[in-house]
Length: 219
Image (cartoon, rainbow, N blue to C red; front, side):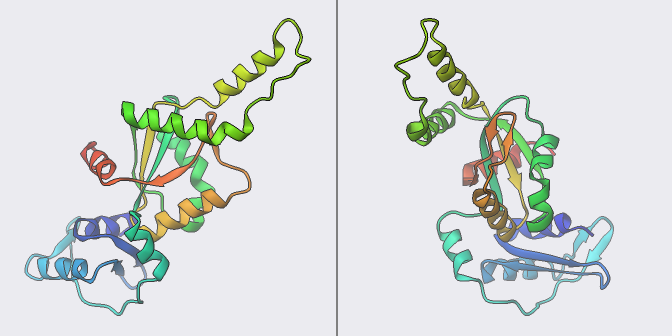
């Protein structure tokens, strides 16, 4: 039984704070953000056992740690188990993205399903506007000594090309809220950004609409 399989059992019932699999004992634990979610999965499967493959699972109550304040605050601000990375080029593949994030996810979480989809026109416009704001203080300065062939202008054009926004986005399911929070924070705290095919990886928590979009894509 894998971590991802355990998370998939709990996802329909509510936001999972954390999950743990003990292969030696043949047991797993799911800690939900809301007590009601735990109650729903427990009550739903007393008479109708959950299954992984052909194996029937027995659900019981376990002692859990209180939800941390930063987790509760993050949920209130829209945090969830899925990250959204916008502005990717069409050349970026699922495997390339997983490889780029591998050093981080090996430590902080299990990288689950990755869905690559095209951004809407509104999303693309918003991403382009956000990039303009970010680049305001790093614009190429005008050089009064630029030669008559316009080398200064060419440098500026090259910089714009390097910073262009791609039309794709990746929706990454981490399974649990804690894993998504840790990986997002670690990427943001890096001294050197992760760059993939010219795009700086800047994750946000997926919106409810994006989570529905990912769920609609066949596995």
